[in-house]
Amino acid sequence: MKSPGFSCIRLAGLCLLGGLPTALTAGPLSFADAWLLLQRTNPTLQAARAEVERRTAERAATRSLQQPQIDVSAAQTWIDQPLTINLDPIRDVILMLHPAVPAAAIPPFITTIQSERFFRAR
Image (cartoon, rainbow, N blue to C red):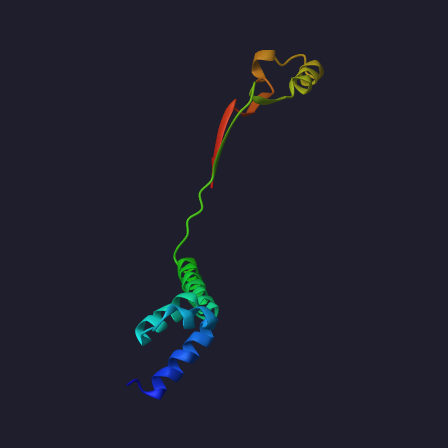
């Protein structure tokens, strides 16, 4: 004969599962089966498992933030023509003001400040 304590545990487990009417008609249920059924179907236990999984993932994410990080970026740009500064009009004025100075003595006032292609990395 089964002990009355076992029946109370079984009844309490079935009430927790919310399946009292169907469990009573399904036939006898061992304690181990009732325990497994409780663990699979109880929404409170499922929510607790989900919370543990969430906290575990959160801890892993936090741990990865403590690792060294490297950020690398690069850019390469092409333009149609090089960027130049043309100050030859000033050169022409200097040559007009000083006619004794030969034009070959004063270099051109044109300088390239950027080629057609340039690269920048950080």
